[in-house]
Amino acid sequence: MKNPILKLTAKRVTKKAIDTYPKIEPMFGRQTVAGHGQKANLNALMKEVDINVKKLIEIFRFILKYKIIFRGRGIEFAGLREYTPEDDASRIDWRSTARTGKVYVKIFEEERDLDLFLLIDVSNSMLFGTAEKLKSEYATILAATIAFAGIEAGDKVGIGLFSDKMTKVIPPAQGSLQYFKILKAMVDPENYGGACNLSGALHYVNKFVRKRSIIFVVSDFIGSGQDWEDELRVTGYRFDRLLGIMIRDPRDDFLTSGVGSIRVSDPFSGESMVVDIDKYVEEYKKAARLQRLFVEREFHINNGGFVQTYTTEPFVKPLMKYFLLL
Image (cartoon, rainbow, N blue to C red; front, top):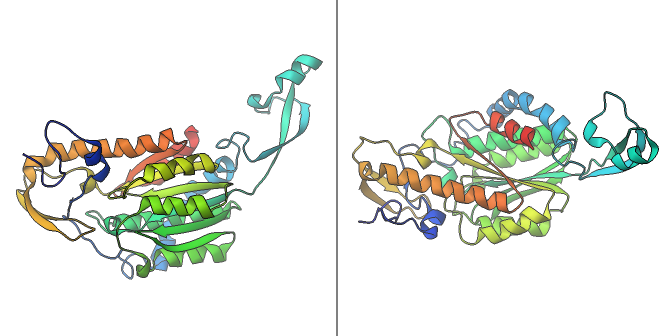
């Protein structure tokens, strides 16, 4: 018997099922236009950013600034000098050392001209939450924190908000004025809602964002539309770095057993139906895991990184772990 939530069979999980999971999503929590005017006003957002950014900003200053992450990409060779005990051994020029009999290290000058561009999903599925924050609220705080850290480190930062179309684009720029433009766009309810077209959003980035950029894709990757993998391949090899950040509410990946029948609703079409949840707890969990692995694999095989976080946990730790392991 087919699962009315996931459109899966017990015997076989198809690629189509993985791509579309979960087409119908349990509405245990609240779904509204991002809580704007409630939690996510500018003052509250700035307070949340202040709490998180202190932990992240040194990572941007000393790691994101091309010393570890880019391993020489965006750094111009300037010459050689003799090695000292304080130097990084990875910068030893072995050819010069062998030729002269003295140990030399390479000297680099940093080209501080990489942009940060955050592509943020604002579609209907992001306007859902069973915890303290909706996914959209959590994404807003995460994106604002990255934006502040980048601007504070001297980078140009821009954002693109997308649903079935690009609802708001702020081209990369520096300075505090740019930061407040980004905040205002992310708390404006007019920018939220609609279906999700990840392929179209990536196509926009590939066409209009300059190559020397770091691209962050912030989404729950639910109902992402068709053929986005092809555009992601272009993104991964066009830009200096690509990172997918999957934001999930716990209910996206796990159903609560023992609740009996509930009404579930498609966040995009509005269709709803009554389902006995207890029958599908394990199958739902399996489908969620397969879908996450599918998205993660697409980023990894296309020259990108991938981080998953839940709205119930801090996002700074997994981001720092990702940067430090590069």
